[in-house]
Image (cartoon, rainbow, N blue to C red; front, side, top):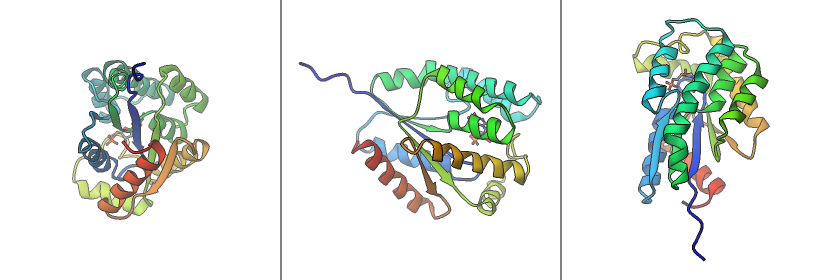
Amino acid sequence: MADPAPKGRFITLEGGEGAGKTTQSRRLAETLRARGLEVILTREPGGVPGAEVLRELLLSGRVAWSAPAEAFLHFAARAEHIAALLRPALDRGAWVVCDRFSDSTMAYQGYAQGADKALIAGLSALVGLTPDLTLVLEVPAAISAERMAARGLPADRYEREDGDFQARVRAGFLEIAAHAPDRCLVLDASSGADAVAAAIWQAVTQRLGPP
Ligand code: TMP
C-alpha cells in the first residue's frame, strides 16, 4: 500500500515587541529549506493580499475599534490567510513558519485590551487550525524597548502602547504557554541571534522529530 500523503508541519513564533520573531522565523525557514523541504515563511496579520489590506488598517491606528471588534478583524485576516495559503500548503506537505498567529490575538486583544478570552478561544476553534509547535520568544521589558527604539521605524498602533500594555502582552503569552505545554515552548530570546536560532532548531527537532 502506498504511504499516506505527507502532512505538513505548522510552526508559529510568538512574543511581545522586539523579541526577534521576524529574524528567527527567517532563520528557521532557511534551515528547513537547506534540508530540501518546501517551506512557506509567512506572517500575521497578513501573508496574503486580502489579509495584508487588513494589516495595514490594523497597524495604522487610523481607526480605534472596540477590543472585540479588533479581535474579529484579526480573525478575518486569519481566515483569509488560512484559506488562501496555510491550509493548501499544509495539505500538500509543506512546512509553514508563521510569524504570529492566534496566540497573538489572545495576548494582545484578550490579555492586553480586555476582549473576552472565551470569545477569542471560540474564534480560534472556529478557524480550525492549531500549530504543531509554538515558540514563545521572551525578552525582558528593557531589551524589548531597546530593540524597538533601535529599529528606527515609526511605531505602529501596538508599539505605541505604554509599558503596562506591553507587560500584559508578555504575561499573556507566558500564561498561554503554561496552559498548552504540549504545543508551546518559551525560549529566552535575550541572548544573541545565533544562540536563539540554535535553541529554536533544537526545540523543532525534539518536538517534531528530525525533518
Ligand atoms: P509585527 O508583525 O511587527 O509583530 O506587527 C504585528 C502587530 O500586530 C504586533 O504589534 C502584534 C499585533 N497583533 C495583534 O494585536 N493581534 C493579532 O492577532 C496579531 C496577529 C498581531
